[in-house]
Image (cartoon, rainbow, N blue to C red):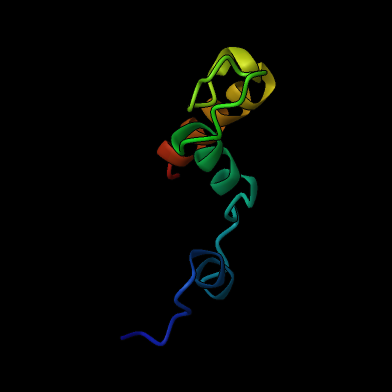
Length: 71
């Protein structure tokens, strides 16, 4: 309607928003929210848990806080 790009990243660029979209956010969401292969090394688990990648979990929490503080 306003001729803005369809992507969030593109719209942020056009609108000159200072805090741009974090490209790693989608990867983090997929890592923790999507099923994974239940391999023997993972004990048959079909989800990635925070205990398995603590640095990714911390980064994911930071991403969520940043996303929630839309200032």
